[in-house]
Length: 474
Image 1 (cartoon, rainbow, N blue to C red):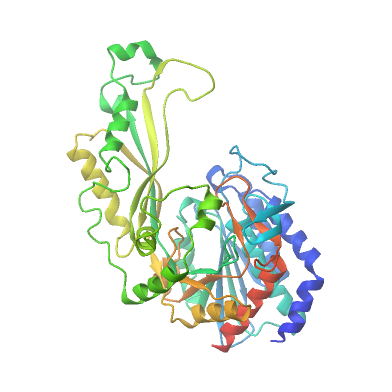
Image 2 (spheres, rainbow, N blue to C red; image 1 turned 45 degrees about the horizontal axis):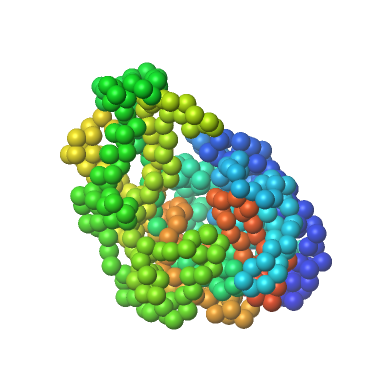
């Protein structure tokens, strides 16, 4: 490919690419609240069609998957995976409107940038449009793509991708023809360092609920006057006591029997990557972005801190509520209380083994009445080797742009990548240069105009073009 010519096209079509990005950012697609999903799926399909893809909105029992196919008869086929759904944006703390695609100055440790603030900016409509705009730029300058392309955009990633496996099974014969997969995502942190992750943890998401009705004690139908606590039991306190049995007092060690039995130590390849990470790892960008002051262990022990993040299976309380939570005072004895919980799975834990362990733990400790309600059955962990050609193509791309990537064995977060590595048996990589942050948080953003250390959107698109070129070279 003529990279110089393609880069010139990107430079001269910056405004057009921004308008397309702005349009999809301002289109709500909140899967947890079922807001704007169908409209966003149709917009994604329109963008696929603009690239001359044979496009299908694949209906599932949940939200649709948008599927695009572009065949040129080329030797290689690339599968690109996206998510078009987002988390809600109605939480407090936004200093910019969450759905107006606002450009505003931002000071990063790397220097001054112009950021684009919107829900879904980094997670992951911005990276999705980076790839689609890169593909358009290649088509317009080269006349055609030098590879076949499969585009898969799901609308339930934030729900645990419950119906993506149905789509993969239905289109498995076509999808398996891909030589590799890519998940567009920006790799640079606030200082400009490139962090490349070769996999993800798994996840299960569920609720624990204690109710007076199932317990047979306390209020059974509705909350009652708080003065009745003197002679009526509290389901809220029972839930708190049940939760307290799950971990040690600090919440960092899970006490469920056999919870850690299948946790595997780092592989020899992982150990080699970690040895290199110890030399370059800097926790400050995370601490600054997430507003965290301390870790669960001393950050001076860099190797143990890295291993703690990557190889610890966790049981996290995402939220807990019951009774009156509004403004002012209202004395109430709640009739039920609920906690949302996620479990993160590391190699070699299996998703289907974990909830039975929690159920057995609760029963053994006398909490047979506490109900487990699965919200997202989630997915297993997934990893690829750093030696895979598609991973090496991304590494070479970063180096060609002047960045030495910090390569991590996997991410602490989760995504349905097992469908690629295990079900379809194809290698994958995440990537594109660029920076964004605050996914799931107020003031989610991506960098629109960068600086000498962090690339903006035009640089991100150029890096994606360069990656595609490197991947074609093998």
